[in-house]
Image (cartoon, rainbow, N blue to C red):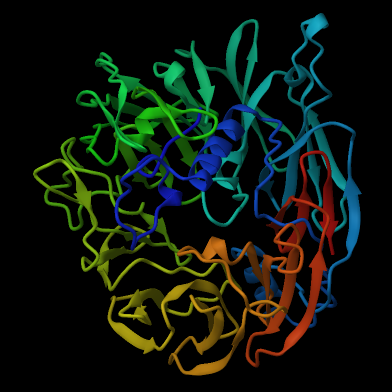
Length: 574
């Protein structure tokens, strides 16, 4: 499908931006199409526009103490954590079986990739997935620990999390869940860390099935998504579909439906993949579709200039390690893995859920690196049905168990990379400054002069590395907010793209606790390459810098090591 717009794709929204008054832009449409396409194409030729093809040295050295081993374990488990970033990149191993590959999971410290088994042969009536195979690779050495045929597998793991957020991440999973199809019907296959099949169970009640996302032509299909905790999530529109309004060109470039847009509710069920026992189930009421928020209910022409019929069938489901997201026409919901609705108003009275006449939020709920959640304010709807953001309204900070901790001064600015240590603060913009509040009670800890802060790149080594909109990097003491050093982003002139989101300036961030590597577009070649720059966290000295020019690929941290994937090849970067 040509995709959800601002309401249906929460990852594309800007907390400080006004609600959209026109169709989604090219970047929004491209990312929405990528997410939907990846969900129904398990071979996963996901080429992340802006993700970088590169390699990086990862050398653990000799562990000399228990404390150092514990530190390395924390780094390996942290977002963007890499064991050693002391030297520039080198490729150490390569896995290329000659067929399409796609990453599906981190499982017991291994990278699990799925091989397509070759291209489909239409004349023979053979689907390439009939010959799919899983390979478990040691991310440090490339050694294949085990291999398993998964004939008929239509979906494995939580691949959708790769394209769901600003930072591509492959969630660790407790068990790898695959959904397979054969003549007898649908079944769930559960694999443990040793490559042994723990269970294979027939799935009842599945007829019309799609994986990860449904488009307007699949509005009654069951969207099926494996979860990181050994579950299987089912989501389906329920009720009778309403009339499908047609978009009308009210003015040049302004489209509005010729009638009221009514979306159906969504029934969600999470079952245990091994036993089939239902862990929880809920009906998510469709929210009122405002005049400004109907774009997720329409498909768009290839050039993005003309919408098609308005329909509520669009639905995208992402199952991350800490949060489940359902987005589409009249729905923008986030839940905990246990099924508790996060995008309600906190504190809730009597556990009340969001009602169908409430509108979508300016931004989605965000899972913090510390294990909690940040809940943004809702849009304010006027008498004419238009929506506006309340820029002064605070965000609500929740602990991991969803108890209310306090209020944030603005949108959460979580670091893209950490070393696994807890700085004890959460960060947000406040009046052109960067504000830190204690994660335990929400009380103000410190404020720092960061001109129009765009985001936080890293929190590691006792430092917070922030980026200002003028391209300046500022390293701050994580406890006091005192400035440690300042400089410009990248090894080039510091020239920046114009944009309000961190992803417009930065492609990726990694840290080993001593250094932080920031990956930026290649200024010299118009952005087709990339610059990798390693900064010493406490001093700002550039440890090394290197330009990369080998096309687009996805570079993922896996158990403290970096691996590069381009759709057909996986390489170890160490």
